[in-house]
Image (cartoon, rainbow, N blue to C red):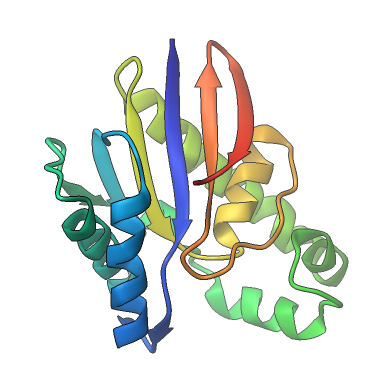
Length: 173
């Protein structure tokens, strides 16, 4: 039996609200995502919650568990991530590790534990969709699975599947 968590980066935004293109992209994404979700999870940022609302509208589904906010998927040190991004030679976590190794290590551990806790809350064969941010989604995967994933573009995601005690990472969609 498996549990699945899809980590989705919010779509295009201006400030903390989706742009019209971001709204259209999220609604369209909802029409393409297959299967049912037991739970929708937002990092708490308006753009993440709005992405989930648009995905849900595009899917035409009901989600019994509704939309919850799990602020643990949003870094408390966003300014430090921005500073590391300015110093990094790229947008991937390896580049961030070179710019600020302590940041990536601590945040990956913290975000990985938030992701692990979400898996523990899901029922058997349960599925959750988390709308959040980059590079924190990538850091959560690193912290939980020990695997580096490519930076997520807006509206893109990655799927994490737990079978027993083992995790695997797949592209989303």
